[in-house]
View 1 (cartoon, rainbow, N blue to C red):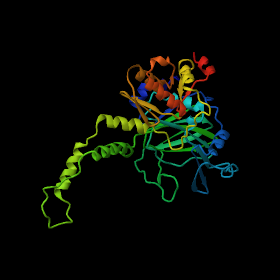
View 2: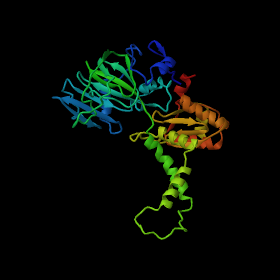
View 3: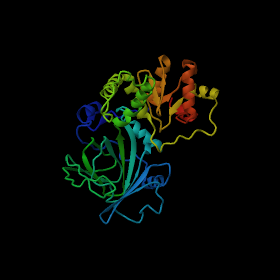
View 4: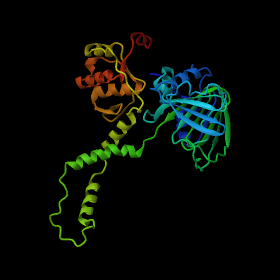
Length: 384
């Protein structure tokens, strides 16, 4: 298991969460070593051309903002333009093991809130303009220098006829230049603008928040299923009406009474959150192995080499329920303890006879779907 950060600047992570998190911006000089990242601009430009990678190109030529969605062909990349463009690559932690390891350092915050790492490669003057985000973000400088300006303004009016949500008025109150290893934390709603001073790469460690409307959908589906099993509305005592277009009061009262009885249960909220927060992003594709291990080979590997979650796999638990990539599983006893260990450490090695047959079946199905993998023998030896 990759150790999480213990300090952010002069603050312990506990102090950071109590004093800074979702409260105020926080600049951390030398949060990481200057040479912590081996990423290069050419690496990100190659990734932006791949159809399985979410990418964007933002240009600001002749005072006009333009946005292009990937995959980006090489001819689309303004490589001959020395200024005012940037390429964004989303979900870099799912592609680059070193970036995935970086994301694991931030697991002092619950996985339910962790989202992904976006990389921004920019030439001088490149950026995406002044804007606000609805989520928390750590802006970590990997290469080059970028100037950040922020504002605590409440005016969030955006420009018209621009493909990006850019602030019409931006009045910065603080300004910093970040060098490799420096990091800036911004809570939701803080107006900010980052502009590259040199060719640079910034890694954005982003966090997610529940979408209440989307969370309500599975619960509403459950309510519909429950209601479909109840008797339909009856009005055997209805009297003749002289106002046929008027909604009957008895029907209105009965509908309201039915809805009042369909109150959410704690299990409804738990299942909705587990499923929603582990659902893979639309562009995530799991490629099953061409020659997977058979069931016997898999159980031997569980005991010897051990298992690991795929970089794109999301796994959470609450009470006796486990969720992996949007699917729920109920466990108890030693099974529950083992699956919680897998979720927390993203690895699991145990004797197969310590687990029940249903749990082994579930793990093997996840392996066949490429949601989990068997550790290579060499990496298993190194970890001991």
